[in-house]
Length: 150
Length: 101
Image (cartoon, rainbow over all chains, first blue to last red; front, side, top):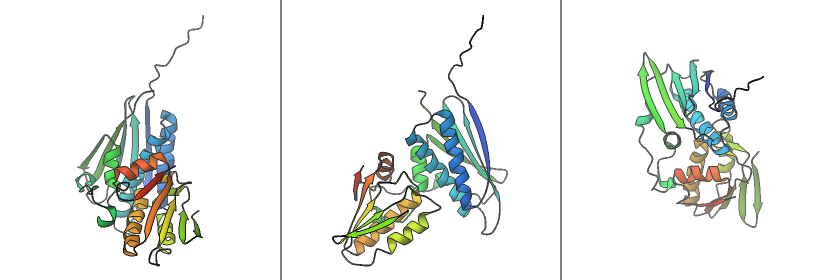
């Protein structure tokens, strides 16, 4: 007799991506997030939001972490434990804590606000938790999103 | 690909599928090339737009400012629900006309 073992439907996942601090590497970030979305069966809206989040944070590192003309590595990892999807972004550039950036005043007409500064605000709104650490000369940003099990 | 349509004194700028970090500069050039005349009546048609990063929001912000200085009008139309949510989250829908798909 054959016994069929059913999986308990909990998908676990761990993935890593190494990037250079160059703008066209954002394509790889986009692919990375799309693959995660496919593996975990995420809906279109969440997938778009996660792409927004990763593009914002990785592009910040690409544009501001290193002096112009320096080629450096950026690491992005994603892990899913059956409940929470955790992204970790690290670079060895200058210390920058995006969680400390002041939120824009969204009750003010955008045309009268300072231009820009919305990316980090979007990230804080979309993710459940965003934490920053400076460890051994590295910026380490941890971003979590709770995923509803379907 | 961005398309620019002029009819009956109105200017419609139809976006491509994405406004992201990589192509935002190009979109900004196209939209700002339209912003010279006083009283401009501008519509940003997002029928094909499926993704917009904060670089896109930044362009909308700047366009709002310029159109206001030119005493013109500016609205965003045919916005996908997911993108509409981002525009609400960042406080745009309260201050300008944004029409959903």
